Length: 443
Image 1: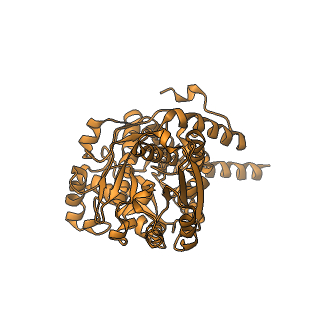
Image 2 (image 1 turned 180 degrees about the vertical axis):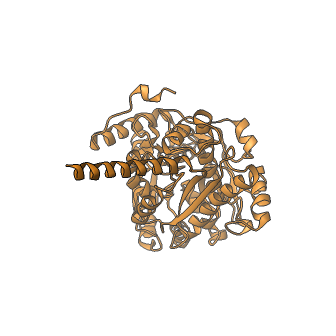
Image 3 (image 1 turned 120 degrees about the horizontal axis):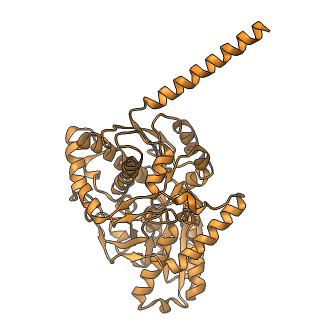
């Protein structure tokens, strides 16, 4: 009996020591850690590299210029996914336990789908700016997903609005034929429900042509386009698929000025190798670009000026580089917002940063102060709205550069909101989950 008590006492002491060490280790976390999932290799590297470099450089710049977030230094680690879902999940599992981790940017819709069920259990929010699950705008159903600034449903709706406007009115779409050439993946399939709804409402014929990843072989796809002779083609591509599509459109004689891409098909790598052959091609623009903004000048000064840039200097301010900068800025501002409630100068947890993401209020004054004048519209999230902005513009390639060719459009929320609610309810039903209680939203 004495021996048993001694063993039990020793076990309890060991357990207590373990808990104490764990607690002390948590209390001693001094740095906010940002996991950076990336793809610098494979067929998607030309697009993935500037995106990743923008995120890295903004972190470096804020550390150098501001000393971190209210005195909290930031660290980061990249993990190469190759745009593969299984590798993305492996990266998530490896990095999620790092001290100071509080959010993830999966950088892939497929990886986002895989992590959406893991995030609530791990209490780590997912930022999916301009990608991911369209229905996750519904924050009452998706507590941990944040499709900031737009989804594939908002993008598809804006493209239909723009085409209708150029025709002289939405009623002029009746009888038109629109073909969706899409990446055969969760990313490429996301806009289909919205386009089907718009086709039913407006009376246009919708044709859908999937392209097998990575998209280097599209001859049969564009032969179908030539045979069906659509009035417009929507390009939902990524990486090498985009430039290949433009080359095939040129080869088959389909007018590039009748082609409209999502914002992931509207960057420099998509068109620069096609050059004049892509002239007239349109794509969505979530934000501005270029090196003239204050934030880009600060990156050039504090990062590239010290030979610490993640990539070449002339890449700074390019479309996807800028998108990486914006994603990282919103991530940092979510931490800063969380600090306002939970303690300035402290490392924030996943749950605390989730609250920060749900209570972002980035008005024009704040954007100007951060150096983002002219790069993006204000964004404000809420408990029931995890997107915060549903605006985009259209840009057109002139053979050498992108030029904005429209004013801002806002997605039609009278159409989107019922679809989002129905889609979210179905997701919850399938997963045997319930909506958040209103009390969960109280500050």
